[in-house]
Length: 313
Image (cartoon, rainbow, N blue to C red; front, side, top):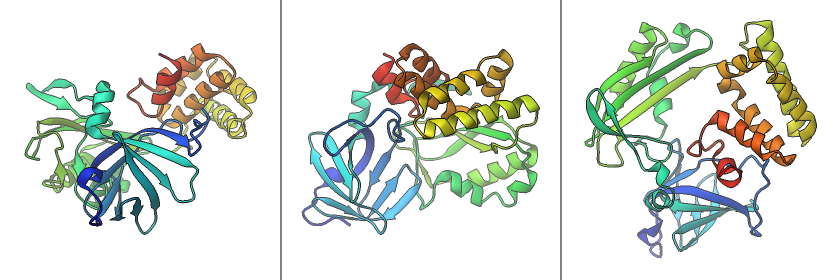
């Protein structure tokens, strides 16, 4: 709950803009937190992190207290500045509306779906699931024995409209696993009615994915060779042996066949591709670093966003 001294200014949705060390120094480019997405949704007695982790919380004039996290904070300008107890970093958050004003690339774009004009959700602007678990966890919990009908290396994607008044309509299975799984998903999605909240007041196009993949599920010897090269390179990277890691990453990419394998299994190799980009940065090759990051996405992809913004403009 909020103390009497706490103003309503703290309530709402906050998006992480940047992180520094508490002394103001920037994070190292190979730091795990260099480019991440983080959202804090603050309500009267609850803190929701990334729309998936829920804490009962108490808010004082300068602290956020949960059973598992304790943070000092201050409101300065448009920013919420957070420092978790025992941490040496400061996190700078902007209210969602201020974040969108600063970064208009995240303003939902207009799309046409089934002949209807809608706004497309994105990494920043998306529905809020009003339960103590995420939508993904909710759906899985209502799809009994789904593991028995899902083949290895399966991918599923559905799209639907979330109307301004929170109705789920016009569901399309974009990538099917099989009819049985698709049916379980549709039944589970119906049970989310009234729990999935449209946060923008206009009809929104929403997508949901399932990936049932395991890194060890490589079928051919060529796939296993590429995976082994990536794994060895990752081990060097973890020890800050950037030159040694880059030799192996480049070897993994050296043939057209290998590149096709990496593209096919990009979900597995995305971290390795980012690490390769960081190696290029450390070694002064910005052009190839930016090409590596670009394989993952553009500046709206938070896995590479800060690399692209800071080095690839």
